Length: 163
Image 1: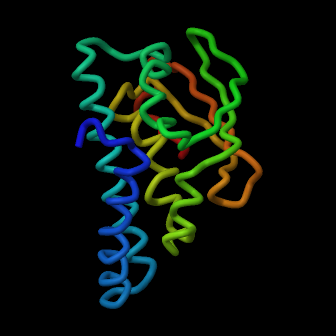
Image 2: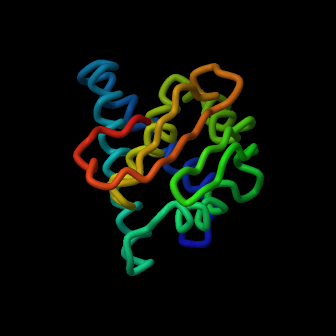
């Protein structure tokens, strides 16, 4: 599973989570189904971030994060346009997102943000709580691009990350 591209991992997860979402919707309604799927994906992203940080053996910085980004872009999963890369800032725009395309094809476009987009900020919580993501728009929500803006903000790890 470790060598499986993340795009393919998300496809497999979505195939299962679609059924979980359907069952919860039938039993408790759409709002509860969205909340459960959102929380499960959030916990998974935080755990994944912790795993990446532990494998490094030191507190990750934006350079470390940039080094693992190819895992998410593998197989042209994302088309990225760099904006700024410094030790304090990692800014880029995603101008094509195959994750979004895949969820729409699977009939999961309405919850695609729960399955993928919200994971981005949550990953930071586990990876390095001082790493913050600000994003004001996503392709998943209908925008022309996703605007990722990562910053290192030491001492603010109790602040809520946007995703």
